Length: 256
Image (cartoon, rainbow, N blue to C red; front, top):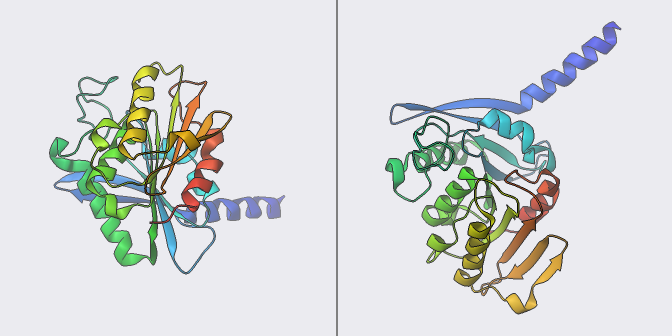
């Protein structure tokens, strides 16, 4: 029995050792991120930034959007938003954690947070700068699009779930992207997300005639041979956890 307890404690210690909470002070405001170190070490380390939806937090995202268990070679960083986003569909007063939804909004507070984290890991870890990715859900997805517009040189590919942004990405450089949304979404209407997906296709000159569909997923190539995937789900606003392994495969095959 004693040996069993010791073994259990050892497992807990190993798990906790791989997970680190870090805090940053950005213009007087404390910000939080949870880091999961890669389980498989390589000479250079890819990075995945994950951004939760409105009202969420880094702890919840790390437990439910387990990219670290699926992309074991990567440093996975679950970022945490803060209150103050007053134009949210579900939180008009901005009481709950969220992310800026447009470039130059809220004095770019979340861009500055990302910049601080990226600067630190660039200096302290041997990153693979050709394999840096961002994943977002809902309001976090909108912020991923803000990063695409304002920091495109940092990223190889994106995953956006239940958060439209196709129209104002016109003029942004082409990147590979996985776009996911649900027909039964009660927060962001399906028609809005479907229209947004068409704007992505139009903005990046996707070849719709050569599209290939497998179940709920349709694959496109853009005019610059980037990969565009649209996942049109028979589901709601939730993040499609069952798609995470395929999303990771998509990220792995896309380099900057």
